[in-house]
Length: 269
Length: 258
Image (cartoon, rainbow over all chains, first blue to last red; front, side):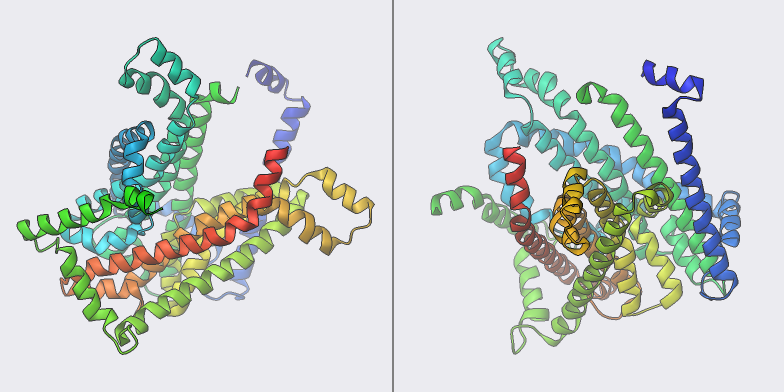
């Protein structure tokens, strides 16, 4: 860390120069893509595709569109409520299954039957069972997001160094203490990877539910409504929201990756 | 053999019987007993002349064909493009941010773009699935092809191994563990997108059956649809693992000796 920062402070070190070069090439790649998009659209090669500049202007416009912002926060809210609930549900279950092989073997068949059910297949059912819609959304997110967290916790606990658990046991620590002091910390990096996967799954579920319900809020509903717009406007709106959602996905993923690296630096060292 | 099977599976009948008894006692309209679900499934889909009824054939078949077809297209395009991009080292920095961005878009959002373009029908489903699942395949193929051992490739070049042989004997095998990791993700994602695109903007398919059942408040049919999709998910995952395992055996063996 210190070595890297002294290197970059000079600004002329080979490492820093390579990084700047990389950023420049990133920017060139994006610029060329946007230019090609603009040209392909302006020359009428793809008539259905609105020009990049129009879509980007709409991206900025959406930031000041109260209706869109309300929909966006409704989608994100469901994910923000559902994801922690999934963690609270899946991590203890995963720890339990991981530390008690008897229970794991007993329930494996049930897990193997439930896991392949595509979570979006449950959307119509959930909309009947959970009212109002936000509850159905959160319930589905909790269900779908729990799987990667559960499985990763299970693998993480299995990966625990048996020497560590046996040492604690021989010092007559109870099972709960062993789980709390050894299993959970050493499974933590796995659990975190599961949470990162679950974050993107929760967005998939939220938007899919909003598609099915339509007209009741969320970016899914916004997209369905926008897609019925007249002329080019429908495509402009939809692409602008797509660009927004990509940025949000990128930001969430980058933040979680950064947090993962920072939290578990001890592991890679 | 039978003993281990009993040991592994005994909880399944217990859960099913408990589910049956509880749902019968509670009589909630939303939770029909499993026997009711199964008999509704039989009546709707499995009581036809050749087991399947017309309704089953007309809706299961299009779903499955679209799923397999779109997955095939996405795999072919994703792997071919990914390996090409991965081998062109100079291209990496220009293209990485674009691919990362496309991958970060929640796949169902792609659906709305094609909803504007096609409004309805098979094109809508196929385009949604292909454009939704191609990114993890592409990203993993790029990653796999990029990190092939340089010594192996240089050795092959020195010995005058032709490029096509280098591709099939060195690059693809070396990249295959990464490629398969992307493919495994794409299988379950394809199923999700198939259902989403059929729930909205379709006139046939299993997702469409769910929409109809939901409009009629037909709970046993809704549960039945979930069962069918669960079985489909199970079958596709198992088939995939059956293909993957022999293809990657050498890899695990090589890792062990190393």
